[in-house]
Length: 122
Image (cartoon, rainbow, N blue to C red; front, side):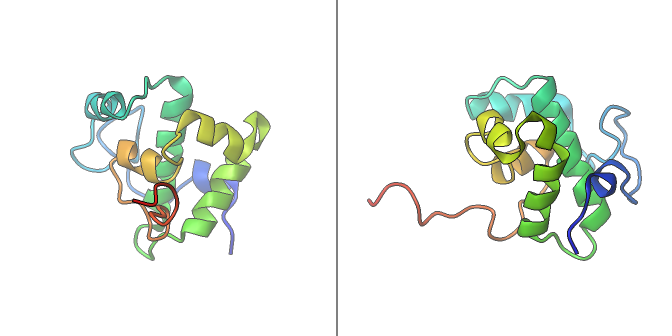
């Protein structure tokens, strides 16, 4: 079953230690994520943090049963539909809104979120 924006916005997980990121993983800090973003050539703004928050919320709700990359993709597309959906998310995260976003969110990207078969043929 595909998750909706309501599923992302109202997860069933426990609150983290950061009130701005209540579903952040243990040990995750916004500062560490900002450093990681800088290493990846990103300057995170409010829009990036909204995606990080959404990924953490989704993870808190679904971590126990495992995250399906397609369902996560669809949930993000729906949540950010009013801003352009996945096209908008790829503009924010050129390394992939799921794989790069998960790295910044401090969570493991689900299997299949990175496809190394595309790109360079070397």
